[in-house]
Amino acid sequence: MSRRALLAGNWKMHLTIAQAVELAQAVAAACADCRDRDVMLAPPFTALAGVAQALQGSNIFLGAQNVAWEAQGAFTGEIAPPMLIDIGVRMVIIGHSERRQIFLEDNAMINRRLRAALEFGLIPVLCIGETLEERESGATFAVLEKQLRGALHDVPPGQAEQIVLAYEPVWAIGTGKTASTEQAQEAHHFLRNLLADIYNKKLAETIRVLYGGSVKPDNIDALMAQADIDGALVGGAALQVESFKRIIRFQ
Ligand code: PGA
Image (cartoon, rainbow, N blue to C red; front, side):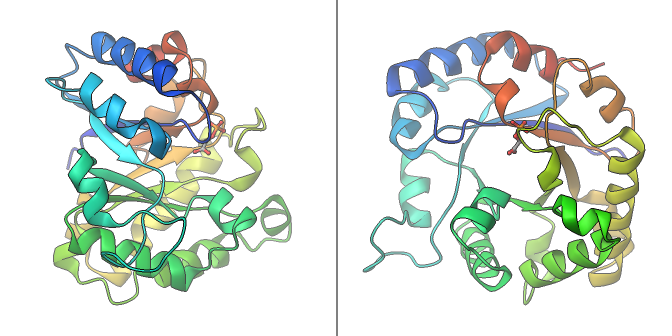
């Protein structure tokens, strides 16, 4: 089973509209011949419209960094799925560790966001991952299982096949400390078995599992060589065109 690679850039709370448009144009130019892999860019909400225009005619997926669970209503500060679709968004990051840790999003809330995204036809990039403390106490797999089962609660297989999963060890995000290829592959393999247990083996073989956490030009090739690593969710290195270009062109 060969899964199509996905290289995703999460721009977090960075870049003005003009800077985002410039970076998107540069990435689109660099990706003009990317036929065997998918690329996604997730700018901040304020830059979505500009980046959508910059990506017109390219095959890059426009992504958002979060999504509300209702179609509209009194939810100050939130953005509804139809609003994202209206602007051209096709993928959405859900459950990023910064949302979990800083904004206290729990598995139940992440599950609501995920189900709403799926209902409206957005492709969720569901993030899960353990903290350093959890890893050091031997709780990694238990934490991953709780996060994955919680997020997928009541998600039928027909919808689950749309999901992209991202394993992002919290201790590796923005720290320059990448998980070793063995640590990453071990976690990805565990997650694929877990998906087979929750759904079935065939579905587990089709779902893409990305690695995230200090992905850089000098470690992307080794990560992508692992059997269960199907792509990368990239923060810091996605903000510079040269480094992201090298990541997209992994060998
Ligand atoms: P990083 O961020 O690449 O800067 O570590 C990854 C992420 O938060 O998705």
